Image (cartoon, rainbow, N blue to C red; front, top):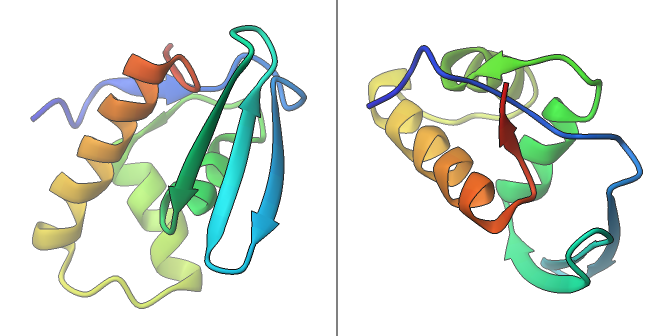
Length: 95
């Protein structure tokens, strides 16, 4: 696990989102690709939307303030996995 790696978005306007019931469509402007995601991906992206670089643990801390995520030792690997996937898609980058 890479809990010390920091993640960020290039800019707040790099992704356009559209909520459709429980799903969110994300249009990544620079790649021209649209991605369909569900929670917690939109919430993770919202945490990274302020321009700061966050570790998976810091993202988890922010999300835990708003949502019941269960035990941190179980939630942290899931948040990290989402961040790694978002990085592979180009929606998030390593700072």
